[in-house]
Length: 310
Image (cartoon, rainbow, N blue to C red):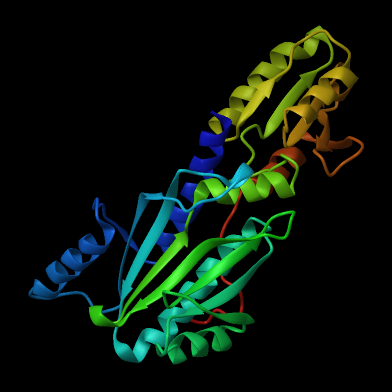
């Protein structure tokens, strides 16, 4: 259940950014044929919209052989297609590369680009896009010509997390698999962060720890308010010592533990500890706490200043 919660949050962030960039959702069991059919419908319209024409879909792929934490028989992917004029293909390639890199950045995953070349295929457009975007890359021979973004696990093994292909035969179509595997992304993050995910992605964002019996009722009302605001929160009402409950919150990978005592409540203050970064709790007002978690709870793929195409 916690894995599903994380996956849905991550999917929501990617989808929101795609829609903001003008991608339209569609569904087809065979995404490649679906892309061709949808573009044929577009061209048949009496007054088709101006290019670029963008659409996206989530799909399930058969994954390649892998091992350990990264073994996923079926992986959930996010695929986006961009049809554009030949004169604008470079601009759209750069925009797609930024999208791939920004996705890795918000997840705080170390990544690098790899340009794969099949035989004597022309890769000048891909090379130019990578250089114009300012990304260093390595070229390797392969049975397919494409750009891949690779992430590294703790053993420094390289895993592809997204890829881009330029499909010349389809009126300058760019296929960008923005997320090759949500499951693998989460696996890399879980290993890197030792189970602690960033606040916006953590399945349990806030654990409330009321100290006295008098603070139980207020904690329940506060939990309801936080839940209505979209935060994932629960309450540990056990009578066990506070240190033990704080330890359990850490074991269960809560992103934030909030101590609510009678004295603090009289001042409308909370003792807050963000796990695992903070070793000690910090006192802050209820208003300050809500403002802080609203900032921490947002995850966006904001364009870098150099991404003029966005």
